[in-house]
Length: 536
Image (cartoon, rainbow, N blue to C red):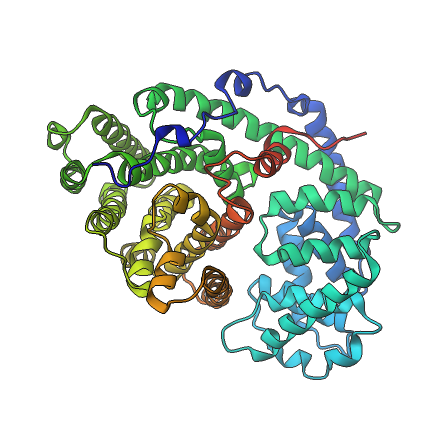
């Protein structure tokens, strides 16, 4: 009997056909746009020299980040923040907006800054006159560590204040739109490219906008999007060659969604190799998830897991044809990656990649046995396994070798031992996933979900379980915020780990966006991948 019994028709074919993908032909591939971008970039670079006031500097950096073009000016931003951090000034005293903005940017960029800077502010006396300050403080509160009660209190108070403000004033002006946007999801929890698409529209409505910067942001977005489209064409051709859609037709065909995961976790143009290869890894994970959860019987899954553990082609002979196809595809992919890495760095990484797949499949098998035996695990037992089945340890092990030019022994040990940054990233994705997929999976007979575990263990209601999971999500973000300041991994690895948590909310905030292609997720994917921003 399959585990659980799910109809393959539950998942509709992908709405993004290969013919559609191969037909994409953005005009922004033309070199004339790249030349125009270079000219605009130098004009924007000159703006740094004109920013003398500290508040202007902070606002400029914030706008560059929200427009998604800060990656062009990494050195300039670092130099400006170094100067701001090292220069003692009283100019921001009694300015809640600027103090909060400064704190957020410095903490985001890894500077050691204390919440003591907020000791002189009483939010209750600022609320009537400083809406921007309250919004700025709200955004800061999501950068908190576990032991920072002042930011927890700020989050609660500013949330109430901003909701009351919207109730009284509506959402017709720019500040109200920004408040509504922030209350839906704070900036710290959003992926950069999606935020850029939204903020470009907001920035265009500002009276004090820079037309040069606006045009630069629009053009950059469209040019980078044209790069994504060429990468997606490659990925779609690869997907067609695997024949997974034909030979494993019970599984989800979500090539585009898997590509969007790669874009969301590393959007910069120079990470083409990462996006192409991570799309493959994510596609393999989607398929193996369906094999364990909805198609294989327990005996087959036990044999399959043993074959993965042995990592030998001959070990799959007793298995069904569809399992052989998946194993061959992954086995060949691991060997290809290992060979390229060996040529580039002289390191043999096969054992790390093999262990990543083995650990994930063993965790899947544990869930399958729970289901087969009618066993509901405790919350602790469930989460200890579920942050692995969600695929993050596997993804981040691959990520390390995709983005690192050299390897450190400390990092390699951390990959094997699943350091906290990997664990917290996995928990963020698992918690968001379970919130978004709970209703669909419950209807389909799959009860391996933290909400079900909570209800059975505590006797609580569904609403109480959902609130509990949301509180876990917030507390895990606080742990992650602290961890990134002490991790030995590279900045790009750390950012990828955090972006997995952000992509989880992008995909699952309004339901199961990875599996169910509803209008909301279609719109998000279209704006990110297919639709350029109007540029004149």
